[in-house]
Length: 93
Image (cartoon, rainbow, N blue to C red; front, side, top):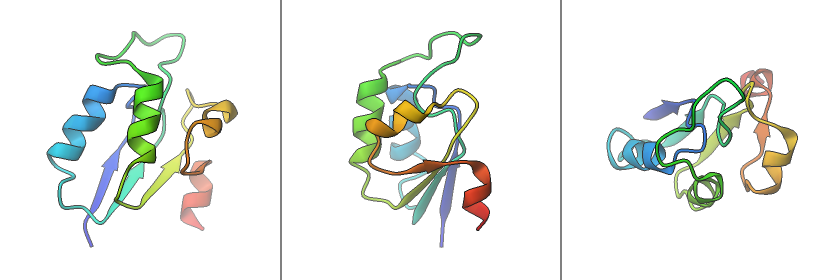
């Protein structure tokens, strides 16, 4: 089984598309380690920043995915994501 690990996409559709079309082409599972949609107050906007677009891209994944909540993620993000996000500890259970 090949697992792709990504984090800190911070709403960047461009970054996530690069990952999917490059190193994740043949993975069986994607683990997103947090900071999915928003950039946070101290971070600059990511290139290709489009939170709605990234949520749609994640929702259209054909590869199974697990998502952990990062420090820039909030509970309201779950309203636009079909894949449940959880605290990092739930990924270990």
